[in-house]
Image (spheres, helix red, strand yellow):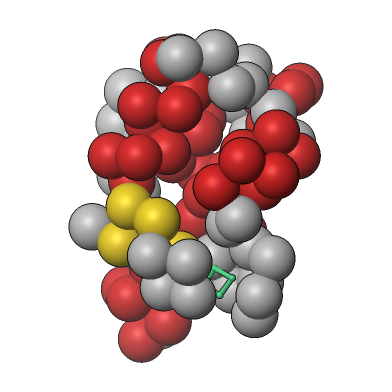
Length: 83
Ligand code: FES
Protein backbone atom coordinates (compact mmCIF):
# COMPACT_ATOMS: atom_id res chain seq x y z
CA UNK A 1 0.00 0.00 0.00
CA UNK A 2 1.09 3.56 -0.59
CA UNK A 3 2.01 5.18 2.72
CA UNK A 4 3.18 8.54 1.45
CA UNK A 5 0.87 9.73 -1.30
CA UNK A 6 2.84 12.91 -1.96
CA UNK A 7 6.08 11.05 -2.69
CA UNK A 8 4.52 7.74 -3.82
CA UNK A 9 6.34 5.68 -1.20
CA UNK A 10 4.89 2.28 -0.31
CA UNK A 11 5.14 0.24 2.86
CA UNK A 12 7.26 -2.24 0.87
CA UNK A 13 9.77 0.46 0.07
CA UNK A 14 9.92 1.50 3.72
CA UNK A 15 10.33 -2.13 4.88
CA UNK A 16 13.07 -2.71 2.29
CA UNK A 17 14.86 0.45 3.41
CA UNK A 18 14.70 -0.63 7.06
CA UNK A 19 15.99 -4.08 6.07
CA UNK A 20 18.89 -2.38 4.30
CA UNK A 21 19.82 -0.54 7.48
CA UNK A 22 17.85 2.70 7.57
CA UNK A 23 16.65 2.66 11.15
CA UNK A 24 15.82 6.28 11.91
CA UNK A 25 12.90 8.36 10.75
CA UNK A 26 15.21 11.20 9.74
CA UNK A 27 17.25 8.90 7.52
CA UNK A 28 14.13 7.53 5.86
CA UNK A 29 12.75 11.01 5.41
CA UNK A 30 15.97 12.19 3.79
CA UNK A 31 16.37 9.18 1.50
CA UNK A 32 12.73 8.62 0.46
CA UNK A 33 11.21 12.05 0.99
CA UNK A 34 8.42 10.74 3.21
CA UNK A 35 6.63 13.34 5.32
CA UNK A 36 8.36 16.20 3.52
CA UNK A 37 5.33 17.56 1.70
CA UNK A 38 1.99 17.56 3.57
CA UNK A 39 3.36 15.48 6.49
CA UNK A 40 0.18 13.45 6.98
CA UNK A 41 2.04 10.17 6.50
CA UNK A 42 4.54 10.60 9.35
CA UNK A 43 2.66 8.52 11.91
CA UNK A 44 2.07 5.69 9.44
CA UNK A 45 5.70 5.76 8.32
CA UNK A 46 6.80 5.43 11.95
CA UNK A 47 4.38 2.54 12.46
CA UNK A 48 5.65 0.71 9.38
CA UNK A 49 9.20 1.27 10.59
CA UNK A 50 8.35 -0.18 13.99
CA UNK A 51 6.61 -3.17 12.38
CA UNK A 52 9.70 -3.71 10.27
CA UNK A 53 11.90 -4.04 13.32
CA UNK A 54 13.39 -0.56 13.53
CA UNK A 55 14.30 0.20 17.12
CA UNK A 56 11.69 2.30 18.90
CA UNK A 57 14.29 4.67 20.26
CA UNK A 58 15.61 5.42 16.76
CA UNK A 59 12.30 5.59 14.88
CA UNK A 60 10.61 7.75 17.50
CA UNK A 61 7.74 5.36 18.17
CA UNK A 62 6.75 5.74 21.81
CA UNK A 63 4.81 2.48 22.22
CA UNK A 64 6.37 -0.93 22.86
CA UNK A 65 8.09 -2.67 19.99
CA UNK A 66 5.59 -4.69 17.85
CA UNK A 67 7.70 -7.81 18.34
CA UNK A 68 6.50 -7.85 21.94
CA UNK A 69 2.94 -6.79 20.99
CA UNK A 70 1.82 -9.54 18.58
CA UNK A 71 -1.89 -8.67 18.83
CA UNK A 72 -1.40 -5.08 17.64
CA UNK A 73 -3.33 -4.58 14.39
CA UNK A 74 -2.04 -1.67 12.34
CA UNK A 75 -4.48 0.68 10.66
CA UNK A 76 -3.84 1.80 7.14
CA UNK A 77 -3.45 5.45 6.30
CA UNK A 78 -6.93 5.51 4.78
CA UNK A 79 -8.57 3.70 7.70
CA UNK A 80 -7.14 6.31 10.07
CA UNK A 81 -8.29 9.13 7.81
CA UNK A 82 -11.84 7.71 7.80
CA UNK A 83 -11.96 7.44 11.61
S1 FES B 1 1.53 11.93 2.29
FE1 FES B 1 3.61 11.93 2.84
S2 FES B 1 4.18 14.01 2.71
FE2 FES B 1 2.11 13.99 2.08
